[in-house]
Image (tube, rainbow, N blue to C red):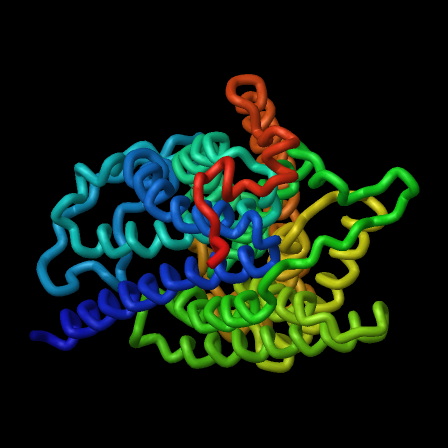
Length: 452
């Protein structure tokens, strides 16, 4: 085996291993969301977190992967791994401007038919599918305890096959946001190393649309203006789930290098760890000061908010900047949860909108502020490393702002419109008597904790 083919094989194994770690994050999401909800809905919440995986994989296999990655011909770090990879036919739908393609959707690789014997493309399918599943599972927490299971199934197919892949194509699949640099002179175009905008904002903004479409849980907001506490039933479960997510996140971020031979993975891993620690401790002291108690639910969400925020800039910033990213994320989580619930009266049982949408937007913008020019030469076809506003390139911040705005103005109305259609067809919400009794016994036909 030549040194080149050995490197390809190592990179292929690296991407697969990272994908396995990200898949394990599904267990973390299931535990966090179930722990943060009430015992009478535990089976239902667990079921959504489990079923979104096989359902989403099939939707992504059939349609989503082609829409997202159909325009990408090859991945140089993986091509040739193990066996010679046949060419992957690729086609991107879009328009040309000033000699550059501004794409909006892939148009190849549906059902993996054309790449059925291409190891590199299949490894990327697995890696991309578990990322999709992360985005798709985010709304299950925000919409828990009142979402009809049949409506959830329809959502799972729509998210995996259409909504997530389209925005993902614009950033990672050769679409128009990635072309803002080479084609419009905005830095390196919209840059998102591992998914603060593509994965987490998309999931979080969809969750916001879903919570608004469903409305709050019965009894959450009282007529006298007070907010009822509806504490989760198993905080130890939520804490363990948070730690599982933190473990899997190392695969999420370092695996996005697509290369085991790139020394930058050490920087990425260290930045990931530091941001989660800073987010957690900042949330701890912030909520302790604000609410006079060290609320562990908020501490867990601060930990996750730090991870979400550092996901986009993790390869482009210094460790000190990663701590700053985490500190801001921890503050944002606490402020956002309080604002959404007490002022905007939005009922999000697990804080998914705050963690994923708000911190995802912050992390995406952090690339345009804090990228220090140490990495990213040639990113999106633009010569030179990625630098943010504080390191001499205000155009990169402009590209990041465009990407964040595009996510909100595309994902929110499309998701809200989808929920509206589903509400007309089959209904989004369970009947009041089902919600009051608990979704487990009536909607699911089983109890998580049956009496002995």
